[in-house]
Amino acid sequence: MSEKQTILVQLDTDPLPSVFDRVVAVDSGVGHLFGYGGVTPGNVTPLVHGCIFTRGPKDLHRTAIFVGGSDVAAGEAVVAAVRAALNPFTVSVLLDSNGANTTAAAAVRAASRHLDLASAASLVLGATGPVGQRVVRLLAAHGGHVRVGSRDRAKAEVVCAAVRARVPGAKLEAVGVASAADGPAALAGRTLVVAAGAAGAVLLPKKIRDTAKGLKVAIDLNGVPPAGIEGVELFDAGADRDGTICYGAIGVGNTKMKVHRAAVAKLFTASNLVLDAEEVYALAREMP
View 1 (cartoon, rainbow, N blue to C red):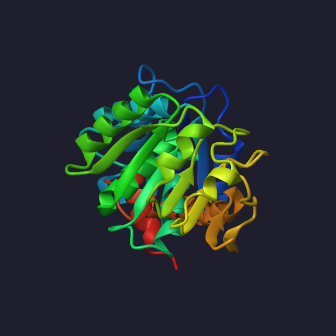
View 2 (cartoon, helix red, strand yellow; view 1 turned 30 degrees about the vertical axis):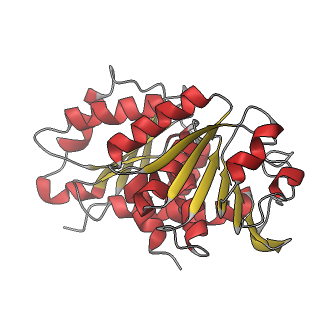
């Protein structure tokens, strides 16, 4: 009998399964793609059981689950329900709601090409959003000092507490950046800045960035003009701009797409993987 084809079951928390994620799955070489929208923790169990009770244990590595959608918190809740339903057998699971894990992994991988992240001093702007939180997590795991920037310092403190729970000993500092006047202090002594804020919001004007004389790398993840870091271009992929190495959203996005495809392919190498931010980043670190 020929080897069974791979099946990816796409569980999307939005009403319609993401076309973007479906295209990436096809380009990753998936044999068959089953897409379901409107997935919640309350309705996911029968879908999971359809994955684990249809093939024998030796073939379960050829079935996998992708959890996506625009709401990262909803995706995390679905993953928790999926894991609870994976009994007595398992299939591998990837979480990438809103592209948060693959984008954060690609951004930190870009920074690591130019800096020793174990000693780098970083500032993450828009750090309370889903991508920003994961960038903070990944940077903190390297051991460097990370300033967690938000317009609301109290929300930044919440992120710091959540990351410390996952990364014991994380060197984190919550900073409020409610106005441009807060920028110079937040940037002081930083060698890396990552902007992960809402689309179209300028988080770091160039006149403020120019005050950070030790800044070596600037990464802007905003793909909708105006740029989140003024002066960084959308297609920058290591461009030197006034002595700072810059990456724009599409410059990072090329690596993000490679990481996304690699993560989907990784699912079919075993039947018990759970790929969250850290596991996805491990794949990014393997890339040249």
